[in-house]
Each structure stands twice: as structure tokens, then as C-alpha cells.
Image (cartoon, rainbow, N blue to C red):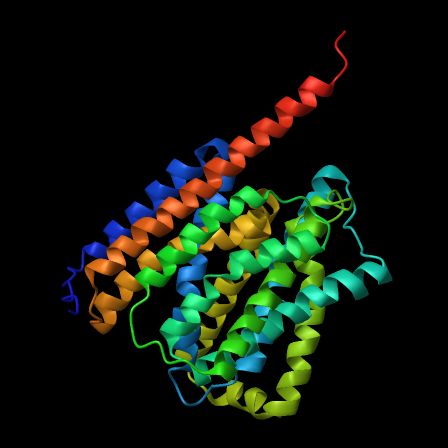
Length: 347
């Protein structure tokens, strides 16, 4: 039979936030304070991003997603520029400039994959239910594992076990009618592959041979350039000059909503790169699933959506998957270090 919906009191939202914070601290405390702080910042920005965009689009006066995406990319670059200028003043270290090859074959594909993944995900939502798209999106960590291997970076196959546990938990915790459409599924899978490509390329730049050149701030600054250009071209093609005219007639609340969404996007993009640098592209995908608890509890309180006991079981399995992944990764890292130490010539 069907499970009865569980009524959730208002105080459940801060309680859900406390549970998520405690889980993140408990799982990642060994990585250090700044890694934990970056993960929490990333999850908060990720949880509030959709709400920030919805706030902008709640008025019919400004519904231009392409120009808004360009504004978000520009805000990300503007956040990084003063940080890098200050660092140069303090350390004398110049702002790294990518070569034409790096810009063309690494940074521009990162920007294009990011923009295309958003478009593909939006198209998937046109053909399938939100619940179905969420379940497909939860498999992004598996796609990212494949992309990491394809780009020649090291990956332990044993980490597939906790990743599949997490995907199973996501499927259980997603309620709603699973409207299936082959075209929609292909768009959802394309969005996954594009996200995986972007994450793996980011990891390769920040942890590979050029890791001293491309820290999160430098990479975000330079990848924001093609992102802005791409968004402006798409905006001119599909939205024309309407967004610019609208900016002169909308009231102050819409301008405030646009500014806050830009701040949210900039913080999200920078924290995502910091998390990717420390945990890898797969680790960043894994940790992003923890936000589901806060998002769903907020939906229940704000939109009065029913919640089932099966969802609670699903969230528990998601947390177990995240914990299992972090613990297994730490153990495998220690084993590699022991093997290296054993191969070292003794004095």
C-alpha cells in the first residue's frame, strides 16, 4: 500500500540543517577546518541557488535566463579578481595567465560543458517529471568516475561500491510520479555527462601538472570569460535587446533579486572549485547529494508537500553512502602511502 505522508513542523528545517552540518563535520573533520567550511558553504549556496533564481523570475518583467546566466558568470569573475589582486600585492605572485592551448582545449570546454549541462537539464525537465530527472542526476558521480579514468587520472574501482549505495539512497528518497520519456532521459544523461566532463577537467587542471598555476580562484576567473561571451551570444540570439530594456523599467526588488542571485552564484562556483580541488570531481558530486535533506524539508514546509517514511530511509542511505565513500577513500590513500613508504630505500 501507499505510505502515509508525515507532517513536518517548521522547526524541522533548522533541525535538518543541524543534521547536515553535523554529518559533514563528522565525515570530513580529518580533512581540516577549511575543507569542512568550504563544503558547508558549497551546500548552502547549492541549496539556495534555485530559490534565488525563482525569486528573479517570479515577476513577468524579467524572465531572461540566458542574460542571467551571463550575469552569474561575470559575478564569479568579479569575485575572484580582487582576491587575486590582493594576493599579488601581499605575496608578489603574479596572476597566472593561461596559454592559448590551455584556454582553447581546457578552460573553454569547461565553460561550454557547464552552460550546455544547464540547458540539457532544463530540456529534460520539459519531457520528464522532476523526480525522474533527480534520480538520473544522482548517477552523475558514476559518470564522473568514468570521465576521470578517460582523462588518465587515478581512480580506485572499489569506490564504486559506496557510490552505488548513494545512488540507491537518492532513488528511494525521491518521491513523485516518475514520468518516463526516452528523449527526456537522453537529455538528463547528456546533462550528467557534461557535468562529469566539466568536473573532471577542473580536477585535471587543479591537481595535475598545472596545479600551482590554476588554483580555484584563477581557474574561475579565466573560465568566467568564455562563459560570459557564450551567454551574451545566446542572449542576443534568443532574447534580443529585451533584457537590457527591462533593466531600466523593473522595480528595485527585481534588481535586488538579480544582485543576490549573482552573489549566490559566485559563492557557489568558487566553493564548488575549492571542494573539487580537495575532494576531487567525484567527491564533489558525492557531497552535493547531502543537500537533498534540507531541500526536501524546505519544500514540505513552504509548499506543503507530503513526506513519506521511505524518504527518511533514503536520506539515511545517502548519508551512509557519503560516509562510506569518504572513509574508503581515506583508507585507500593510507594504503597507497604505506606501499610508497615500503618501496623507499631504507637508510
